Image (cartoon, rainbow, N blue to C red):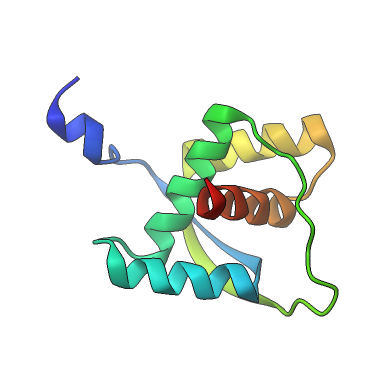
Length: 108
């Protein structure tokens, strides 16, 4: 593995999707995008990849009054296909899986 493989994602086709994200999670992604050299879109893709690799789809406790907003993302095609597999396996929506991925990435 080269040093580039360690720190960079290889090119992949991107699928444009509108996904609802819990507002509290999105705000934390905004903060991280100011710390790391990565867009919110890249942070979401990394969170999804991490969840796919660990298959950690453990639900988290959501705030009762949590606001949910839809955002446009360019999701890596290979990751999106894996999300669809997890959706079928666990009976969770893509929206829910994406929020779970972000939550666990933020709290690891």
